[in-house]
Amino acid sequence: MHDDRIPAVVTGKRPVAQGYYAVEFEMTLNSELPPFEDGAIVDLIRHNGIDSRHSLPLWHDSSRRNAFVVHVRQEPEEKCEEFRLLSSWNRGDEIYLGAPRGAEVAIDPRARHILFSAGVGATAIAGFARRLASTAGCCFEVHNFARTPERLVFRAELDELSERAQIRHQIGLSEEQIANATAHAVSPTQANSRVICSGPPAFMELIERQALQWVYPSNVHKIILGETTLDVA
Image 1 (spheres, one colour):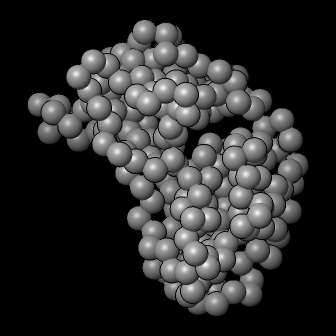
Image 2 (image 1 turned 180 degrees about the horizontal axis):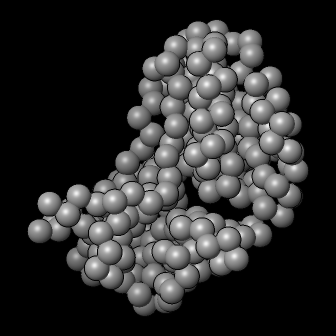
Image 3 (image 1 turned 45 degrees about the horizontal axis):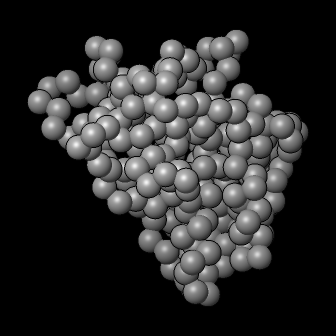
C-alpha cells in the first residue's frame, strides 16, 4: 500500500541557528534514496497513524554516503508545525520518506535570477543557488532574511557562493522594511527574469505580488515547505 515510502532512521539532531536544528537520518538496511541535489525537497512521514506529511529541504551528509539531514524550525513556545512533528524524534526512531524532488525551475543562463529566502527556506534556496553557480554565465543574487544574526540559517553555505553572486543577508527588518527591501530587489527587472523564493507563506506571497509587477507569471516560483494532508485513498 505504501511501496513509495522509503524507510530511514534518525541518527542525531544538532542546532544550526537559534531555533533551528539539523535532524540527521540514515537509510535502513536494503533502502536507498534516489539521487538528488542538495536543497531538494523530501516528504517526511512518521509511522504514527497520522495521515500527514511534512515537506522539508534535504541535504547530503558530507561525512557519510548513505546519510543526510533536513533543517527544521523547532520552537516549542510558538507551537510551530515542525516542533510538533519532530520534538519526539530520538536516535533510532524510524521514519519514512518520499522520493526527493528538485525545484521545477528551468535555468536560463541569459536571464537574471533573483532568489529570496527566510528561515528553513534558506536551505532550499542554497541548493538552487548552487545549481546556478555551476551554470556557466548565469547571473543571480540571493536575499536572505532573518530576525537576528543568530537566527540566520545556512549563512556559511550561502556565503560560499559570494564569488559567483551577490549574497545579501537582511537582518532585523520590520514588516514594512522587508516589503521595501524585496520590492527594491525586483524593481526594475526584465520580464524574462526568474524570481524564486522559499520561506513562510506570507513572505512568499509578498514576493509573488511584487514580482508579478515585473516578470511573467511563469517565471515566479515558490518552493513550498510545511505540512500537507496525505490522500489516504
